[in-house]
Image 1 (spheres, rainbow, N blue to C red):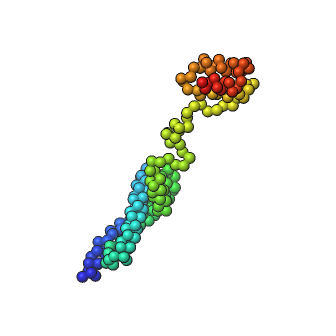
Image 2: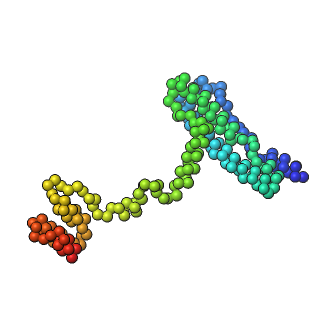
Image 3: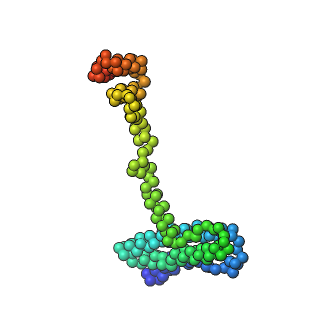
Length: 208
């Protein structure tokens, strides 16, 4: 009974491949627009088959592990027909034929996708999906982070002929809070530049 059940399940596991033909009778009469359109359709179909083949392989791994650990007849549910892989390779061969036809007719057609390229694109999409969790990549400032680093003006080089202390004083005045009396700051700065008060007195009076 287990053997019969296994054969039944094995007959239902997976689907039969339906590959496209690499050559068709009317290929010679195709226009450039038709060649370009079919290559694009084949590229989309090839991506779908590569995704399906990867999912089938993952399913086979899960079923095979379960069969080895739990229930051996479950192994009959594994898909060994490889329909998606067969069809993907057929689309690649068809694209090769169309690419050669486009070169012969000097057509501008879309680049033909291969199985290897489609698999690489799938890996890139998966990697991008895993990293796009809403957090910024290292070294990239988020709007909140930018706001934290935009308080006050950035320090600038002193103007020619202006002493360093005076330049620092002017920078301090530019980044001062709006509540501080700017007229009072200018008066203190002028007194400091005339030598009427020292730097320590200037800082004390400004803070007070």
